Length: 177
Image (cartoon, helix red, strand yellow):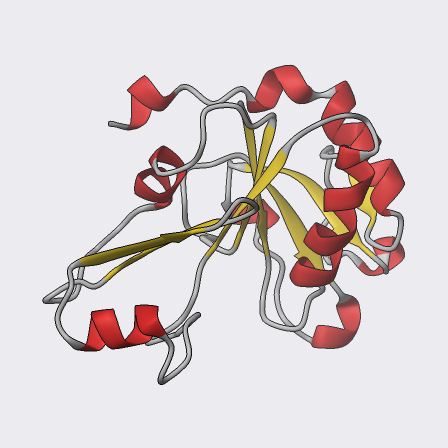
C-alpha cells in the first residue's frame, strides 16, 4: 500500500484535489482509500436511524453493512488521541493508495497544497516530510524549492507524478506500531 498526505490550510483546495485524484487513480486500475482528519464532533449518522439509536443507547461500536457498503462507528468514552497511523491500520489490506487529507503535522510524506490568494504561509521550508507542492500560483511561491511543483488544477498530472514516484510512498505499518 502507498500512502501520501495532502496538507494545507483550509480553503487551499485539498478536498477538491483529493476528490479529483480518486477517479484519476481508479482509471489506472488502482483501489483508493481516504483518511480524513475531522474537527470536533462530527456525525455520519442521522437522528432516528437504527445505527444512531444504537450509539445513543451506549454501544461502543456499531458496524452496519449491506451488499455494497460497510461502515464502522466507534464512540470513545473520553477523548482519544488517535494518530493517522491508527486510522491507516483500520483500512482494508487490498488498497493500492491511501490519500490522507489533513494531518499536516504527521510524519507521512506529503504534498503541500497552497494557493497564493489564501494569504497563508507555506509549510515546505520547515517540514521535511513535504515532498512536492501542488499550487495554482507557482510563480508566487515565497521561497525557491528543489521539490517538484505540481499543477493544483491538473489531477491527471498529480496522479501520474504519484505513480511515477510510488516507490517513495510504500507504507511500512511495522514502523508505525
